[in-house]
Length: 434
Ligand code: FRU
Image (cartoon, rainbow, N blue to C red; front, side, top):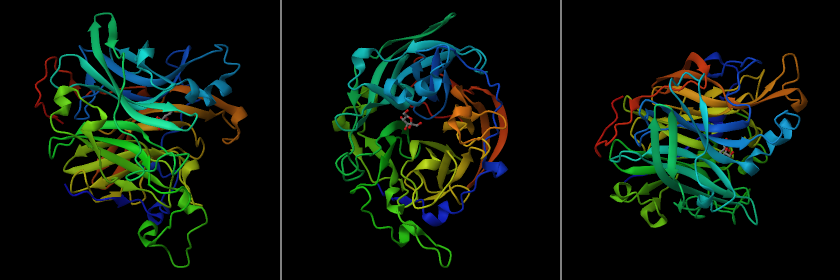
């Protein structure tokens, strides 16, 4: 297969501007509701099929979230508990009859602790296994900080059950590691002690029926030792010179392909995957492109990823939010940045850290979590005046119009829209209907 690495250039990123109403999240109300007072959640995703459609199971809506249990329910320590949450992160789940966002019930841990190869469970996706009645694969990131940074896209499998009273799971007793940063297609811990290698997103490519997996990664090579050449720069305005430190931005969107036949066998082990060249790199622009995911629509392939204001390099800047790229020639590109700049939905400058971890579904509904919201009239950059979120943000909808996107609708907090009901006993060759 022809693979092509596209670039998010410095010239593209110079077009990123906060507060354009077509690419900006609405300012969230100070009185936002909290899903559950005993737990704080952030990265979240809906139960889906391998084609990317959000599915219901026996009529129930199901989502997974990264979670921590609150230690101090009085909220006295909420700033510390929230900002150290990655050290205690586990994956939990919610279920709801309506998906409206008003009736999520917390189901607790998804993976048994026997599945943990490392202390932290970070993002991935919860996917019904095609051709089965109720097998579900939780793709996730198995993470440890010491003695060196370890981050391995992994999967644990189980079964989903539901009756009139709710949803529960069984299994999820062991973990299979999928692949590791190899220093060739992406930076490993020896090259970059801050390397990112996480957030596996498997899907079936409608063009060839094969199973691929996207993931967050960095460009291979020693941290800070990159040359930012004309391909990374793009067409820069006269007199513009690349700022010092640009080479510390080295994000990439990685992709691996699964051997034919392995998906049907439920075999996701290391020898079944082949890593390919990354789909997009952001060398000279930004050091993180997280939670990459894909939407196929109208012969366009949309690649979405989340990124931070703080991970831009070389004096570039942009809001925390979801960014994206579009290809007219299928999964392997070439891709160009959506809206010319790459910005799809950023936080408003009045509340620059209000939301993060946006995930775009095939119909353009975007779900995210509330991070920190400045109290009215207070300095949006002073942590003492924040209200901490730890709960889902209002779901918004974007309209995908070729190489442009537009914010078009604002819905309820944590509202989820399913594209399909999981067909119990689904045929292997089930294809998306939207
Ligand atoms: C995105 C992210 C993911 C990671 C998780 C850890 O918000 O940084 O890349 O899996 O959060 O909390």
